[in-house]
Image: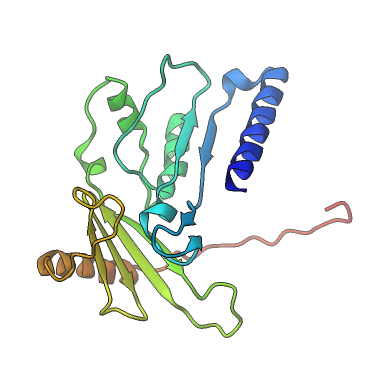
Length: 218
C-alpha cells in the first residue's frame, strides 16, 4: 500500500513537470520536493506517524531542482530541517531573507557539496529540533508535547508528560535507535535537557492571520 502511494506521488510529480515543460516555464522554475514526516513500520513497535519522533518518522528527503541541469546532481550529507526550506528558496531567488526566521538557507551547503567553497561552520553540526503534540485531534484542549533534538551522532527525545523517561541514542553505534544510552551518558542527557528547556522557553511567534472573503466560486 505504501509503495503504491509513493508511485502515485511519483506519477503526479511527473505530470507537474511535464506540464511546466509544455508551458515553456520549466527552465525558469525551482522545484522543491519535501515531506512533513516519514512513516514507521514497527521499527519501534508501531506503524504510522504522529506518535513519536524516532528516525523513521523524522528522516525525510529534501529535493531541490534548479532551473538548469547539474550533471549527476549534488548530494548534501549534512542534516538540515524543513524550517530551512523557505530561507533556501528565497536565497536561490535572490530575495530578502525572512526576518527572525529560525531556519537557515542551505545554499552554502549545496555549493560546498558541488565543490565551490567550504561549508560554513554555523551550518555544520547544528542542533535540529522537532516538536510533536500527541494530543492533536482531541477536543479537551490538553497538550502532550514531545521534543526531539538531532545533533549528530545523537538523537535526544523528551516528553513533557514524562520528563524522567528521556531517550538518548548514538547513531554511530546504533543507527536504528534501539539502545537508550541515557544511563551511561548523564552529561549528554543534562546538556540536551538544558537545550530542550531553552527551546520551550522561546517566545512564540505572533502570527498575523489576514481575513479573506470567499465568494461563491471559492
